Length: 336
Image 1 (cartoon, helix red, strand yellow):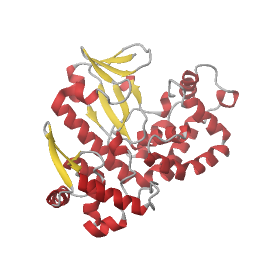
Image 2: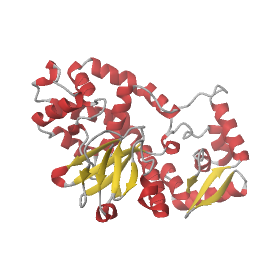
Image 3: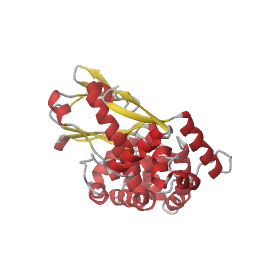
Image 4: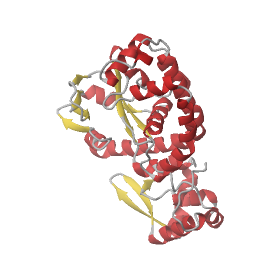
């Protein structure tokens, strides 16, 4: 297993950050795999895969670059620069574009586990090609939905921060992604691969959520920066319930109905604020009305108060969703 040795100062200074590039790269991995893990991803892939595959079919060199860069056990490092946090996509992808061609080929050799295919072996434009593809995925498949994605990622950070406050780093990191857990003795297991341990005490450590079911680690040793990228909690990542049925919106009001349909799993007020984009006061008022109507209930979990639908609320939402899909159980694409 791969693990990092950290100290108290590293943990005290670590933080959760958002990265548009990490989200884009996770979406690239999802497009490359072509397999959804939940209905929301299935709908997204159905809309995005045809254009993506057409793009790569017209550019076999970039298609080969993607296949080699997304190795079975190792991602080519230049494709995943360590996030700083609070940066634009353009600033982040510039680091991919500015990678040394020689280093990029070296990273691909490691990812492939052997010599590069002849079509890539002598090319100096691989960083530019990678940056161009990532930019296309961002512009066409991620950016139009970025505000919704950002709210989901922020909600995950709220949940992880609450876990940290309740149970310390062990509670926050265990289950972050498969293979990641707190081992004790200042050791953080980051994956299941048999890689040598790394001493990162005193380094800057960030944790980066993404909405697809993907994860990886990255680092820049010269700058003392390390990152663990992990999939946000499934209840938030699956957006199949995000669209508000028109009939339910007419009955409760679109904003209030939006709160109700988001409660497929228990969420705190702060999480609801993040995923709906509504203000704290508005969400609070909607929850009070829904509580009075016995459509939601609340319970305390440690220091948090979580809201969930009651049986009556579940019947109401389920009936309206089935009415929207014609009773087939189909999934409507998310509408912001």
